[in-house]
Amino acid sequence: MTRNGILCEINEGKVRLDPKRTDSEGINFVSHAHFDHLPITNGGTVLSSRETNEIANLRGVQLTNFVDSMENFVLIDSGHILGARGLLFDDIFYTGDICTRDRGFLNGANVPKCKTLITECTFGLPEYSFPKLSEIEKQVNGIISELYSKGKPVILMGYPLGKAQTLSQIFKHWDPLYYHDSVKKMNDLHRKFDVPLKEGMGHSEAESKGLLDKKPWVMVAPMMPSKDFFIKHMKSKYDAVTIGFSGWAKSSRFKFSKGCDYSIPLSDHCDFNELTEMVIQSGAEKVYTIHGFIQEFASHLTKIGIDAQPLREYSLDDFF
Image (cartoon, rainbow, N blue to C red; front, side, top):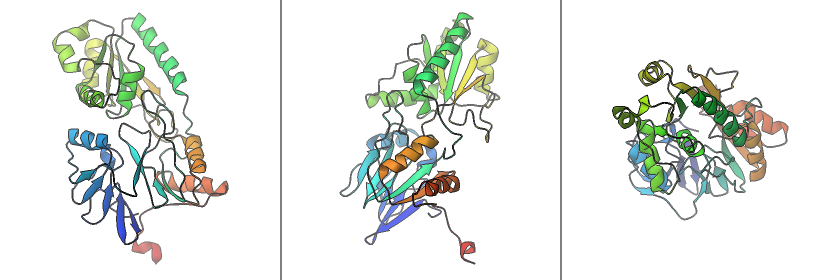
């Protein structure tokens, strides 16, 4: 682990995994298009999915020298968001961000066999156990139904890339359904890749036409704090109710709610049990943990007989 992502040196070649600065030497793998995984500079060959490349372009990040396939490198659908991939090479599997749960149009990842596994563990503690999607749908549909009976509009909030598209798909039966302008733009790109998302009007157009005055309605929007102008406006003018979706919704360690009226535990990552099962299925002889509760999850794996350790950045202080 370096300050520029993960570096693997194999047969005198270099493979950088989700680097912040791509390198002209070797291969730079970009797992998906969330901003924390996109490079801030360009240079050298960038390996990623075609979807990731186009989403990155939409978000203002150009992946120069982009390729979506290379000999001896296999891109594995990681089930995280559209275009998200893990990378299998030289008997090493790097998960990137991963989810083995089916969610709407997203299929959970099928983990390949490997000798070395490099896995994220965002939710690598036993307290993170997520409900089934069917339970979430039932709960949220019940909330919306009750609010609709009172004439109250509902705003469903999640990350604008990933969560917002899942919400758009699984709650598409509500009518009218509007999108925050940023979500509409991302949804339009998803439809280009044949993702079956319901077409809907952006919030600016809907408001300019007076459609938001005709309550109730449902809108899918990015996650925003209650003090954000958009949320304050929607609440004061339309008496809208907010439902926020995140894996941190019921966390005892982090205050997630951000002032949401309802908080629902829905994540684009594996929960603790899914992470454990994913590692076991890989059959890896060595596991390195990254991103999240790296020490705790590695200790858990060690206790169940798996050779695991955190992968972290080292400095000279570690040796003196």
